[in-house]
Image 1 (spheres, rainbow, N blue to C red):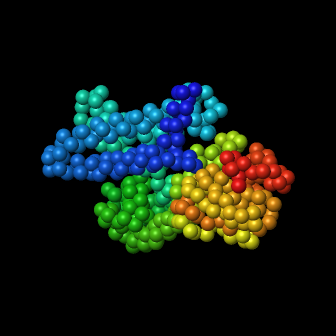
Image 2 (cartoon, helix red, strand yellow; image 1 turned 120 degrees about the vertical axis):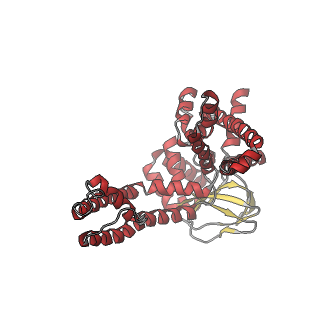
Image 3 (cartoon, rainbow, N blue to C red; image 1 turned 90 degrees about the vertical axis):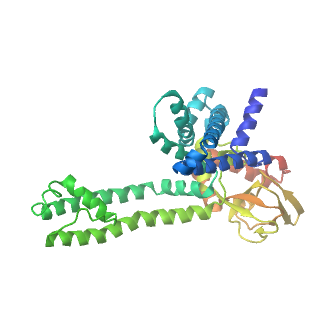
Length: 392
């Protein structure tokens, strides 16, 4: 039990839940700073004068960084059985599943160059690039980075279609240019693969000028291709920009598994249901005194306090709510206006599940519907609310 408790504590330090601690904040801040320092060191080491003058300091920094990142990697593998999606698996399977996750693969690649350099007595300068993989460790802590990944994933089909269109246009214009220029420039446009280089450079609007048409037909094709290239680039850029703007407005801090699974309203859900709830949640940060919702307004969402405290004032008086507690669920479930006015009494981080999303999840996820129905029965029966259970 002592080992299980220690493992749980380590997990909470690495993956902050609803009630984060200053120790967890310190650990995360130190890891972020270490990543930034490492990326800066890799850039500075590419300058011979700096690398020679501070060779010993760079070496010590690398050893210390690899030790810290290795400890983090091993710790994350050790606590994998406490990660909500893996709790139904055996410890071994949970750790194997975690080791294959994108985040842990990045963590492994971040330390591999050092150990490969120790084992193999040869100059492996190409491994320097793998040290820059450490930069992507920031995705675990950055809401902007996480939002970009979510945006790319949500629009993967549209981006795939854009890539398919681009590849089709690439082959078509390369084939057309080969027909137009083959006789005039047999050394540059002898085959379609030869013409593909020109097509790539022109469609991406780079235009190196090393290969260009000399015939009238070739110049006409090149002009059309250049205009087409602008359209080809604008399409995926527009898709990504729109999706990223949508995601960045939804969340201003990273929502973790621990946050969602730690909410009593969602604690009884399976991993698939928790994942769907995570995708539907939005997050926001309120400063002290900020109004979150007002009595009499339509109930637009169920709110969960991730960090900080709020004051709820209604007909029953005032009460203070803290991390893990909810407000607004009764109004949403019963389809009535809010009966309390809620203000932040400290800097507070709030998760919100839109009312429409909640009703949709009730229909698509029976397990979630059962939990929410139980909450509704509690409110309707007028039973005492248990603050420790997360309901005011």
